[in-house]
Amino acid sequence: MKPDISLKELMPLDMTQVKTWLSDIEVNEMWYGCDDDGVPLHIGYDLTFNDDECESLYETIQSDKNRKILSIYNENDAHVGESQLVYEWPLLEAQLFLLIGEKNLWHHHLGTAALVKVLDYAFYENNLHRVWVDVPEYNVNALQMVDHLGFVMEGHFRGAHRKNGSWYDSSALGLLNDEYARRRNRIIETVL
Image (cartoon, rainbow, N blue to C red; front, side, top):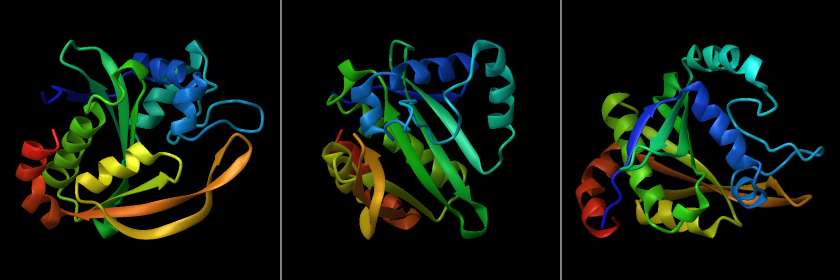
């Protein structure tokens, strides 16, 4: 059964939830790991914020026209993940990031359903030409997911992601608007 998810505007409470998820080693290692001091890394905002700084950080994030952070909610209206699009407007493209923070929901196609929603947003609401992802080699499930959705291998980054003190390679995969438009219905019928 296809997961029923929705994308919502990022709220300050969502940022606090992401901070909690990424304090879990298993979750943050599938994202970007930790810095040398053991602080989880996050692309988009510094996770060392405290409650007093959250609102100000939130306003800074919301004012960035080159980044869109969306919260992922399930059918029970529970916050389960986060997605980001980092835009290169002159090129009509964006790098996409996706995190399902609730580990008990991993491997239930929630990430795939969320990715379809984010791609719909990127291609149909933002009219982007291209969306790409950078997936570390150790995140095999993410590589399989984007492959099933039609992303095409575009390149290889050496030593791009750190995990447990070591550097790992990653793959750059991209999807064009017209490719997605042709495949979208089949993706929904066969993958979800």
